[in-house]
Image (cartoon, rainbow, N blue to C red; front, side, top):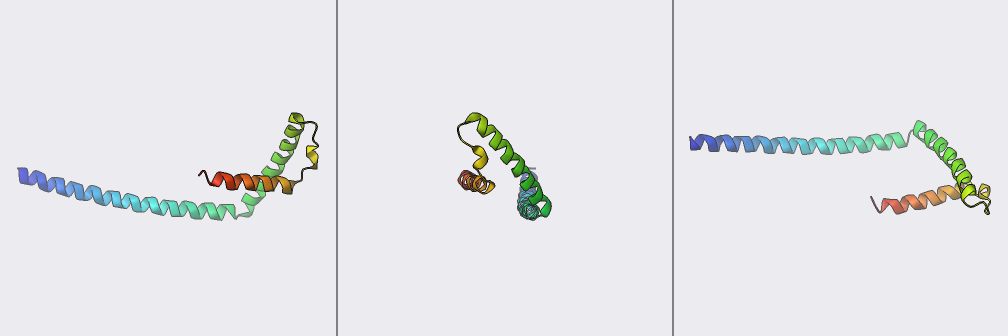
Amino acid sequence: MRNLANKLNKAYAGEVKQTLEELESLKLKLKKTKKYVVEKFTKSEEYNHDMVECFNNGFEMFQDYASVISPDYNWREIDVAGVWQVLNMGGEGMAHHI
């Protein structure tokens, strides 16, 4: 009886190990697929159009908000390129925290 139990345990352990290996393989495939999809989407026209529209709306909101917080400064003088530069610097800084 003990011998049978040992054989069953070994067989079960082998199946568990194989299942874990298959799961790890699937996990890697999912990561690759996700990376591919994200890269394709971020290069798409739809994404870029939506991002520009979102940024422009946010830029106007930023100017309005900033002029309420600090009315002494003419926030309308800040151009889009200047804000993009600040955002890119912030993005690079945040990349170190991910």
